[in-house]
Length: 628
Image (cartoon, rainbow, N blue to C red; front, side, top):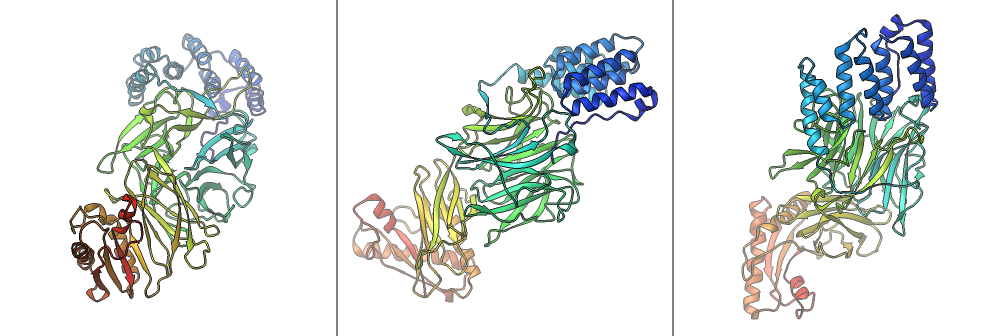
């Protein structure tokens, strides 16, 4: 699962050419590196080079070591020396590596000078183009502050894949235990998921999650759903796995997670699947895979999702995200922001500063991902930036990077950083809505499906299920939007509410069982003043009402219109009848049998709130649905 694994293996050609003494020195250098004796390993490679001055491949081995340590100036010195050696073999390859070393050091002019001296292959032309674009990025830095998450999050090992819940109360990350430098033997490491909670605005010491999430094998690349109810993660080498690494999910109820669930195909295949990210709208899981159909080595894919009444998920229609997101190289670690508009991912195929850079894709008005942009310097560096995520508010971002490797001070592990984003880089501001769902008679908590939708665009913003032990839920809404909430559960009447995106109200939702005489009100049906014509922002809720009636084909209802007390009694009664008729006609046109529907109007005779306030009058203007 750990993406960027580095382990030096001596090429077969060198084994054939080299003396046994040289090959033994290589093995000693490799062993020193895996033990963490970096300087010793470098010294041994320098000794090998001294004994094989004209053999370019040994220089290249040391170049690979220095590249992993971000020691780019030392690489330039090494490769420049080799390039000046007229007796050395493979001068063109050496010059190409020298150009790449200049590129990784941020010296783009020198890199282009080298590349322009070489045969203009497709790869060389790409290097030149990348230099030109990287130069623009590097010369226009973003004014931001990047700080380490500190020792409560970062350990002495590699720390990767940050994750955060929408309420900013829980932070998760993967620790690659045993990996203290880029050359640690992969068989000596163990990946586990850790979690931290916030107290007095400070992240507490991260703790390793217990079974059944973590096992003796590798787990990581975790991602919380926006509401914190689902944890997706990657498990490797499990008996029930389809491939080497599969995506699992676990549902949180109360204080514990369910046993991990492997959804199987089409999400998981015999190939590699990793880095999941669940959309707040509940419709898609984004992930990376190297399965057939990929454009490059690793690509960004997504699966469609259906949330069952039990809270379990079904996956279908796995699709490659295609151009312009994926390239012929590697794209991974997608993160879909709760606004469902901005997608972030890491790539070494799009023009960047070196290694893996973070990029942003943005949907246009036609739902296409047409805009791809580099997140800029110093978010991106000459190292590898992976696992980029942004809080629901858009203010804070987090990523894992090796950008501050310091060989002299023995700081060789990847760390997680926090970034305060400028307004120009922030996605849409989202906030949380919390509540609880209970039975109206027993007050017992209920597991129900909650959907938040934009009443104007009719698009789903957030879908979740309430906790089956506590009934609590968290949903995500954009600030300054008119949104509605629709709650449903089998054998219960639906519940509807208008959501005030500027408040932090806690919603107590009391569901009533479907029984004759019971009623419910849809709060997101709108009419113009003094009019019975349905406004377009009513259709999102009416569509959900239609689904409810279709799924309960034996249910018969009476639609009752109500008004506030403005106007005389006869006028209000007439208006209430006309408005009830409008909804009645809508349902008839959508295929609901006429025998199941009745309508009438009560005018202002049955207020449920005080008509002396704006709020009270708004609650009294309603369409009530009574079971008969």
